[in-house]
Image (tube, rainbow, N blue to C red):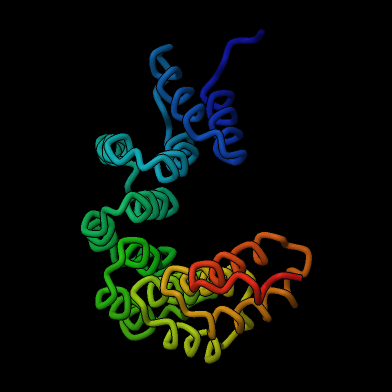
Length: 231
């Protein structure tokens, strides 16, 4: 086999992360360095999703340190990936600190993941504040993924009706991910009424997804009435 280059290793890492083999991606990342090939900023971006999925915060911190040491932190897409990694690992303060440290000229290019990381960490007040600040402070219009995070945040904190209201007032059509998030929150919060509304929407968007039926059935069962959702 021809000699492996940084490009070869990066392609392997990226392929593993895209297909959900996150542990294998990290293994290749470390093996590459053992063989004396130092990562470039592209390979750092390739491996960060694996850190996020595995909750490998210490590895993510090392990548952040390495990126700073070798002058990569001016690369916006790398900073975006680091922010997302910190968010998914529940490290809200470090995610927001990195966002603040980015050069002012780069901020408008940053994918506004502040809503994502406060949502994942369950900080309601901060989540609402950052959602509003996207428009007010950075002139960034929230996209459907940000509304999805807000719905998830409201649902997991028990504000099911407010989550539904947010969906109904979205400037774009809610997708199945948003309705699925609401349905999942309804199960946690034992809210059958809104669950039925979410299920009706999901049936229109994903009529063949049996997982939605299972989730609704679980809600009925949790509430002690399993007979109503039998065919």
